[in-house]
Amino acid sequence: MDNGRRIALTGFMGVGKSSVARHLSSIVKCDRLDLDAFIERNTGRTIADIINTDGEQAYRAIETENLVLALRETSARILSLGGGTWTIPANRELLAADGVTTVWLESSFEHCWTNISKSRKERPLAKNKEAAKQLFDVRQSVYCLADWHFIVRSEFTSYEIAIQIAEQVFS
Ligand code: S3P
Image (cartoon, rainbow, N blue to C red; front, side):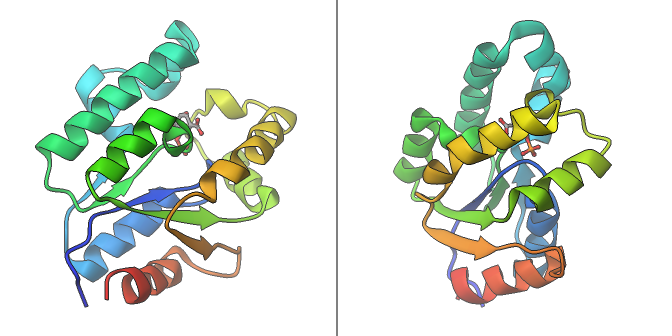
């Protein structure tokens, strides 16, 4: 059950990209890379600090540089992107140029917001529900450009979603 594909998981903050990626990498038995964690390792700073101190635009430049590095210098075949990575045209071009298959974890805003509110991760672009909802709405038409869409609901576990992706995308 492995056609050798390299995939990138996209979707809104709180949808569960990192945990689906974790399960997927153990099901498919290949390395994964979490772009947010990769950026934090390479810069020695948290994403929240970069955005809060330097602004979103500066963060996006760092994110793109790190996406280039992740694609070139690592062999990870499962990438979990930040929630905004796929919304940047240059990033979509980089992923396409590398033949990466993109998978959108699609869900309701309420599902994401519940997870955002429960999470300890600081998300400067989702400081309150209104701001997050606005971003969520604007991004739907870009997320849907991904190659595959999988619906995420509260009653599905990350493991179940990962199994679906493994069966459909990797076989
Ligand atoms: C962002 C999502 C975050 C992180 C940064 C910006 C976004 O990642 O990359 O705070 O623009 O949606 P998660 O989707 O993993 O929370």
